[in-house]
Amino acid sequence: MSGLEKVNVGSGDIKAALLQGGSPATPEDLRKRFEAFLNDRCKGKDTTKLRFVVE
Image (cartoon, rainbow, N blue to C red; front, side):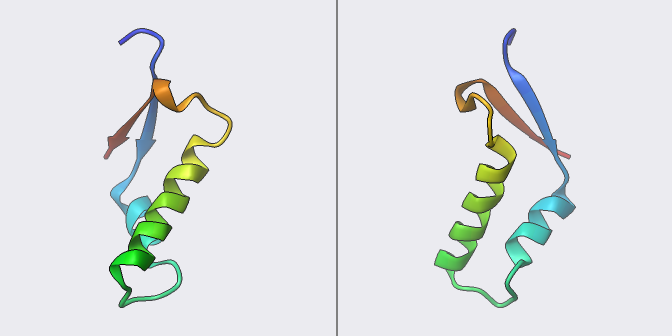
């Protein structure tokens, strides 16, 4: 596990990201929102070394 970077995310952070833009949402809307959330958290980092921990 050496060389890996831990990224902590709270369940509230994920919920806020998925609800951004309103609810209810289509499956495609949720995919795009989650993708944007991950892209934001990965910005400027080597994604092969990242490991997300949901708290």
